[in-house]
Length: 390
Image (cartoon, rainbow, N blue to C red):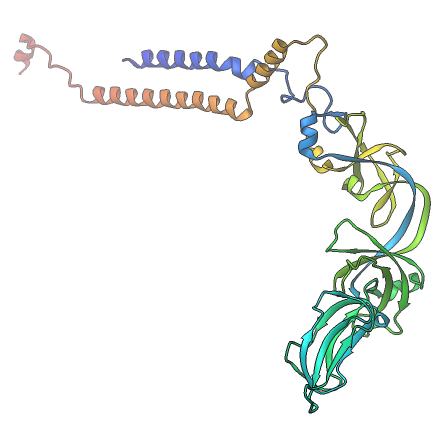
């Protein structure tokens, strides 16, 4: 096949490829939104979702309220037994343990027998002494086992009344002036996330720790159900001031970074339409944050699932009088939108065809030059004139 014919052939192939690809490349020219993005954007207008999407996101909302907001600072500490509410059970005689009637972690009442010791004094039978709980409380630890030998003043059990406990923390030197006996304190422990225990400052240490420059503070916390146990890690939020009648919402409702904070507000009764609003915050405590601008009392703000909500695209708005056939057509039209990678794929195919055409053309031209180089022209015919010259 001649080069001119090959060029024409591949030229026609490229034109055909362009004709085939053109509808996919330009059929939706001017449609600059992805499927499902018709209407308001996720950041500039309401976000409409389905009931199923609401369930999947686990959205929960809470009303903004006018409340008294506490100004606090945080202290790390732990739960401790109150010394005046602790008691030890010890032996007054030499002997051996023959009966243990209370185990570690068990609640006991004052006067309840807890340990029985057999004396080493000669007798038949040997004398026995029963020791009772001196207070109501829980057995925090036990130092003997059955048949263990004991001596006078031997520590047998320790019982702690945990109906009240201390939350012990350490404040820095610069915070000492902020703390006074009687101040309200909110206490959180890892064992019960989401729950808050309330107490008051009972004692302040007499001197600073020279290495850490901190001062101990003890907060008395009611603990009627004995859920708080000694040595639990705790976070203390010491209240230093109050702001009355401010619009406040939970911390979890506020998203974003400083200077670009926002919250989602429910704008319908069914919880299917939400509006993203920029907010300005004020003082905050361990639970709530003051909203200076952007939220009004009784507005419902999303407190759970809002992080995922910021990436949700609003569902398409249904047109009045739309039928199922219209919906199917809209679905097919959305499916016809080609992603960018598909367009690039077809452009790559066209480019590959161009390269193949160029390579084949180069091969044909090279072969033609090779044929021309090996061609030997025929000798001219003999003439009488040439003989005479010789």
